[in-house]
Amino acid sequence: MTTTSDPQTTDWQIRVPNRDELRTYAEPVRLAFGGGFSDEELSDWLKRAEPDRWLGAFEPGSEAPAGAASAFSMRLTVPGGEVPVAAVTGVGVRPDQRRRGILRTLMTRQLHDVHERGEAIAVLLASEGAIYQRFGYGLAALDAKIEVPPQQTRFLRATPQVGRVRIVDEQEARALVPRVYEVARAVTPGALSRTEPWWNEVLGDPEYSRAGAGPKYRVVFEVDGAPEAYAVYRIRDAWDERGPNSVLEVGEAITTTPRSVRGLWRYLFDVDLVRTVKVGHIPMPTPLQHVLVEPRALSLIARDGLWLRLVDLPAALMARTYARADTLVLEVRDALCPWNAGRWQLRTEGPSALATATVERTDMPADLVMDSADLSAAYLGGVRPVELAAAGRMVEATPGAALRASTLFATEHVAWCATMF
Image 1 (cartoon, rainbow, N blue to C red):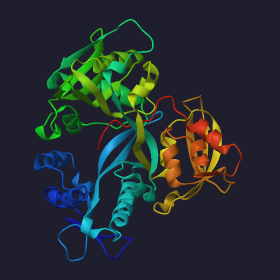
Image 2: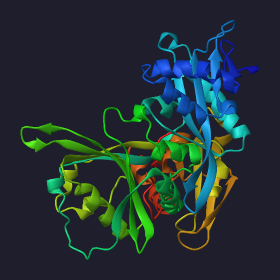
Image 3: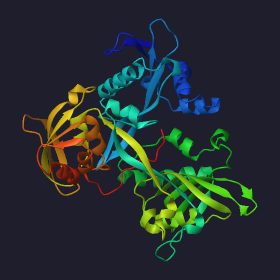
Image 4: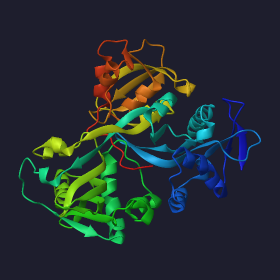
């Protein structure tokens, strides 16, 4: 075990565990989330853990952590490529230790560690968005859920049926599904890489994950034997005096072509003896809004998805491509990562959608002024700077700069993260 004092406080010691100590470090997280993890679920989660990326906050003299934070080493798709990132997870403070500066100590230390590792970006899925905006995270990609009565899923336009959907077992799914995911991931800003332990989570079917529903179904949509989409779902079986009242719960549905959108969702909406189809995570916006005769039947609810934090601002900006050639001067405030603060000239050159950037410090007058969280929100192209300016979160020092930045950061594909971490 290594022990160091956090530079931001003299009250808390930050320690890094070895693997045998992970359960102890997970305890404040378990308590913070209401203690609802079974031993089997906790064991499966810790199999994916990277001990050297865990941090525990200890009061001097204590052997039990008051709070903890961790991260996974993953790769994030950005416009034009992908970058290594810290996927922040397992953050929590014991309920009896709140309001003592523990979370700020942990998050500050974690950002410094991420920077020292050479990772330009950190991402997370927030339990509460209000928590992480304090630490420079911006809402970079939306997510949505839908709840649809199958009888209201008539498609607006009839097209010839192409391809077919097959139910496959877990072994065949492990051979086919990751190939489809990688095709989608390559073009989806916000998508994360998955290793075998992550596919165990998506395709495996431990009893604790069922929560009273039936076994997991895995289906692939194929054209001429080549997979173009897949879905993983369960059925929560129920009957009443009117007959079947079952709910089909989609855990994940990934498509790669327009025809696979129609083919996969037609199957999911047409499963027999189902009164409601619930989908917990889909992109926002979703093509289903334009496929159905009655889009409001989706009962679509938009919400926050992926939160992103620029840890090394110039490296992150130079890691992606841009929609056009332009030059903008960005003035950025960043208290927790002071190396990001100041004025930066973002200059892009090259063909549309493939323009590359150089980023340098400058004394030139700013075109846009913002906090690091605002630039982080705009980074993937999922949130437009004109929207942030309208909300008072970006200030135009040069008229029209927000619109120019919106055009510059725009991407062809909707930013979305399908991976729960």
